[in-house]
Image (cartoon, rainbow, N blue to C red; front, side, top):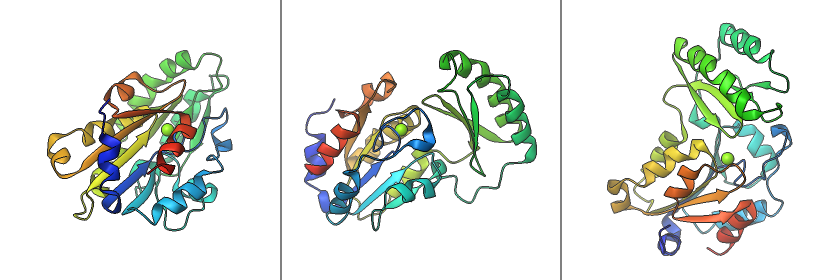
Length: 243
Ligand SMILES: [Mg+2]
């Protein structure tokens, strides 16, 4: 916890980048990922905020279109697929290998996003056991295809190298007009952003507030690095409304 981090961002609001994860951060976690919706108030809160800050962006592992369809906020930036935009499509070998691996695990299912492929284990009998079962084989499939394995809440995803939320956020805060950054997330994939924003060289130039959005599966490492914690998407919207 870092008292004053939020106030420091607030003091630089016209130069602030407000960067937000989607699932578990703006949208409550649901059983079936395709049912995820942001809290209804999110559209109004972000629409009002966007006029007062330098930029507001959602940085997510979802395809950008999924978020745009559910969060119709004018001028909102959405970076999907962990920034793996323009990456080549998956090969049919990867698709076949992943499908074969998952077919033997009841309740697991594959989400093919074109250039990334995710295995969801939330609806299996024991998600921890299922994740354990697929982690090694998926890592090997990723490696042999020159890709990486990313892991989130009950989801393991093969993605191109060089993506990742850290690289997306590093670019977004590099613009000279950015004086402050508020980043909120709730998952393993957000840890690399917290690490990036904790670097002294960056902290010299920017006021930083890292918000961990608490949920049943928020990783302890994320909470430990946070400048502020909030209770669920509701808690985050309260903070954004108060800016
Ligand atoms: Mg999330």
